[in-house]
Amino acid sequence: MVKLSVIVPFYNVQQYAPDTLKSLRANTREDFEFILVDDCSTDGTPDILARAERELPGAVVVRHEQNGGLATARNTGIDRARGEYLTFLDGDDWLAPGYFPQLLAAIEELGCDFVRTDHVQCTGRARSIHRVPHGRRWAVLNPREAILPADRSTSVDYAYAWAGVYHRRLVDRGLLHFTHGLRTAEDRPWIWKLHREAESFAVVGLLGVHYRRGVASSLTQIGDVRQLDFIRAFDRVIEETAADAEADKLLPKAVRTYCAIMAHHLGHIERFEPAVARKLRSLSAAALKRMPQDVLAEVMDSMDAKRAGRLRRVRRRAVGARTVAA
Image 1 (tube, rainbow, N blue to C red):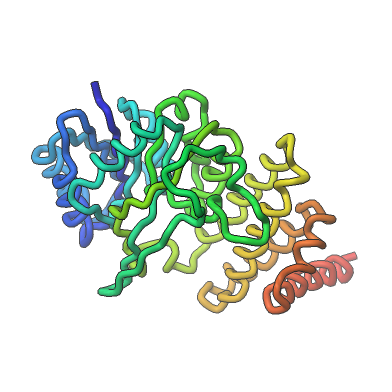
Image 2: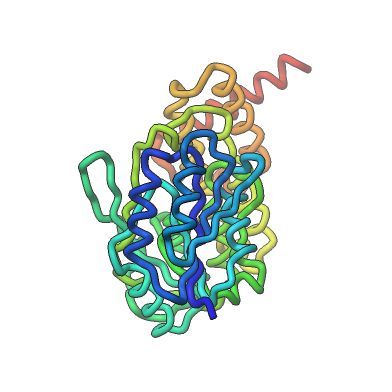
């Protein structure tokens, strides 16, 4: 029986994949499987994965015929997974030796639906520890209660799928799959759904995942149209949260986070090509119009003046354009 399925999407990461696979070799166990999803890479990544399938115990390579993005690649891995527990790693990150056995032991000891962990962020040679924004450790808790408060960073803001491990019952309940086709912010609807609908979770202080920042091929570094998928991602968060029985309680947090991410992108609009920048402004204006207006007004009044100003300018520009068109 497979105890742990590790899902690792790869796309054009030939420079980093050898380190990733080396770290997986330092985390093997006879009841672990490694599902290596090649998302239609066009560099040397497929050859590296072909060798890994021969040399890494428990490795299975699945190749996409078309590039589908990270969310779709993870879903492919989830559908192929046989393990009692599932976890994720990205193809340009790496693990400390023996980390997965420790992570598995933690969730088995706690007996909860999912466990979240801290991680090490690596930017060049710099290292920094990033912790789950939740105070209680090694205690089984209700994940819904970890969404709030709205005005502070909470567990739903720490959206990294690879920072944790998940029981198979979440797959059976339809809670572990990602929104198909999202190319950025794919973790946001996913983490909100987990915290709204799963029954139990815990936070543990394990440090095993090394998250590589500043990778040139990463979408966080590329100002193209795919970055605008954050709009679709947060629209889904708002839509699903609005349908929740506690929508009045949870929506201020969802709207506030959406506005903060939107203001961030608008504040760095110079990194987008002109056509993409225009689309960012128009999509942002339309998204602000779709949000629950009473909640939005309260959120914008409570934001700092700089970020709220960016959002208000986008709204005014959209209203002005509609007036001229009329």
